[in-house]
Length: 147
Image (cartoon, rainbow, N blue to C red; front, side, top):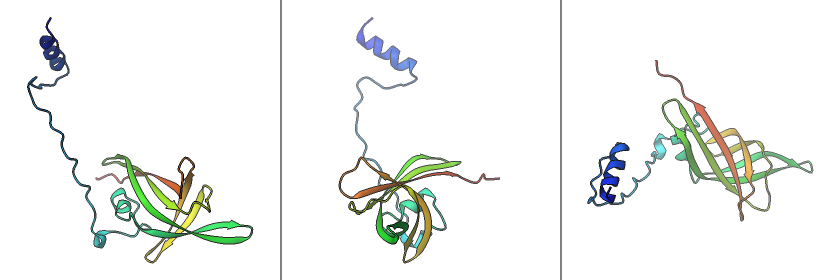
């Protein structure tokens, strides 16, 4: 059996029809869609993936931490929204916030506020990062069924 025959046989078994003399080109990935700011809902109204992603770059004052009897307000910036599974039934993704490295927050539920919004969110620190503190919030949303 020649190499060419072997490759034709393997490709045929895999259900692929690729000519051996074809050119392979690399496609440029499409640019991410962004939602115009006018179409964004406040996060307190919608934690859907597309809406949260539209808030990247926003800063929030985070309340809820009391150390030595004094409440401390920490500023966190939403820096990344990464999808895990997005389909018609489920949206699973995680959100990364960055904050000051000199004042780490423990895992917990905090109140997030900015000029337009207020909501509570469970965050946990990312210990493997250096520099500023990074925090994750994980989302697993079951979407309503269409009837």
